[in-house]
Length: 167
Image 1 (cartoon, rainbow, N blue to C red):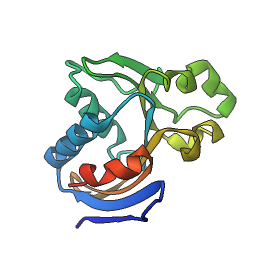
Image 2: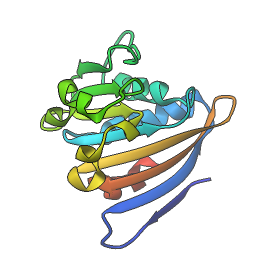
Image 3: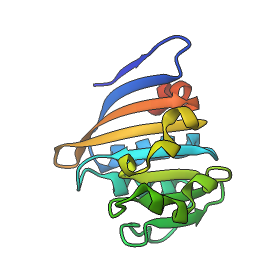
């Protein structure tokens, strides 16, 4: 089931939908990748095992990254120069203080890259939706087996793009 809600003139929109299996997740990741642009933040939330890294890998593979895409759990940030776009994939699970984010250079990277961030609640106020050109919040919930439920909120330019993203 897919639902989409937004308000005329609003700078945010919401959608809720299911991804039945890994194939549906890869197809969703490909649509997401096609809409990414520099300055975008894709915020991936969900419990451990909800599919955040799987979705990030799908986006990177859709952008042309070949080979292994390691989880940035220990490196915190992986940097990718794809044929289409520079992408930084960050996993902030181990971040304990927002002051540590300055060293990662994520805010500066928004000038030339898209960010895909796991555990975005650790980002702090500098990455609040109203401060960014475009932010897409995706909350992933395990719905049984490989199925996932996704609650999406598009802010800024992602409010208009959300309709093209949902299955």
